Image (cartoon, rainbow, N blue to C red):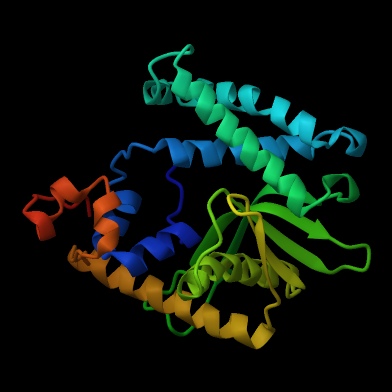
Length: 272
């Protein structure tokens, strides 16, 4: 078996910033988590929008998008059969309501963009880049890895990174957290293509809002140092096994609360 090299993704970096122990449980222990209906609905909607761009432009309409919801749900179930437990069965009226709510989010997408006018370079694009900076404690470069929902490249070469969010637009205080992920992608593209993306665009489907941001190269260089500092902190914690919990309001939604020492739980043995 080939072991995949450990990398830093936007979600894992955010986990460590939120709670080092949460990072450990997800990235190192790889403890299972039970996704909610809201999370799975987001996965289904993402799958629909990805599939939409495999169709010819004349077929990219709202009606087709709605028709893609149920097949996308079946595909998600085929890959993750345990998700069938989210509902009582195929005839569960709550399943029908849930599928309708997914269709409403797909409808919302068409209020934000006209996909017939777009020809993305890629959807669900895996991007990776190595960072070799003096801030790292080990000789091995930091590997950044992530998936971009959609990458648009204009005929003149400008790059736009688009990310779909099935929730509502964040309040101003949470905007920086939302842009963290997008700056991550922008930095990776800068390192592998040598170009600063012209626009980072977040589409919030729940309230039909769009957030656009234009990064600067100097800003991304500073962000690179931030990621290197996060990775160095992860390395130190990994050597000692000291991934400390950081209790917050987010703990109420954490699957790992019963095993968290901050709430009287016992963590599994550190895997090293």
